[in-house]
Image (cartoon, rainbow over the protein chains, first blue to last red):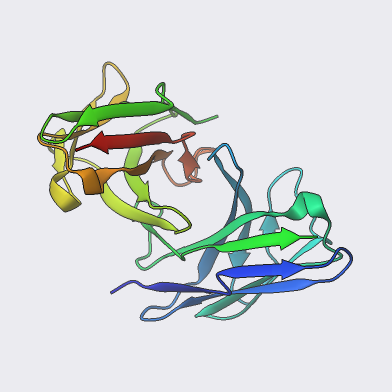
Length: 117
Length: 116
C-alpha cells in the first residue's frame, strides 16, 4: 500500500517551453503533497507544500510563478515548470503521507528527470 | 531551526561486514526521525522511523537504527551488509506540530557501496 505514482519519469524539453509533472496517490488520499528538487550533489530541497483545494505554500527562494502547483483532488498534484531554462534541469520528486500526522513517514514517487536543452 | 547532519559522504564496506551510516540532528522539542534509501533514478523508500519508545528501532531489509538522545544521534545499522544495499541513504527529522520545526528536513545523504 501507500503508492505514489509520478509521471513522466523522464522529460526533455526546449528552453522556453513548459513541462507538467503529475503526482498521484494510488491507494490513499493525500490532503497534502510535497514537491522536492534533488540536486546533483544529492541533497533534497523542499520546494513547496501542495494543499488540496487551496494554494500551495512555497519555500523561501522558490519562484511560485515559475513552478506552478495545482492540487485539484485528494489524489493528484501537478507541478508545472513554466518557461523552462537549462538551470531548471534537475530531478523532481513528489511525496505524500498516507496517514494523518506529521510524524508518519512520507511516501515518494519515483521522480522525474527534467532536462532542458 | 532544525537540521540534520550526515557526516560521511561515502561509506564503503565489504559484503558480510557490519554497516553503519551516521546521522546527528538538531530540533526543538522531541524529534521524529526517519531513514530513507534511494536507488539510482528512483524516489526515496522509507526504511524506519523513531517516534517514541524503544531507542532501538527495527526496519525494512534488516536495517535498524539507534536513537541516542544525549548524543542527538540516530545512526543506521545493518549487522551484515549485502551488495544490494549499495544505495544513497538519507536521514530526516521533523519536530513537533506547532513548533517551527514541524517540516521534514533531510540530511545531505550518504552513498553506501558494498563490495563483493
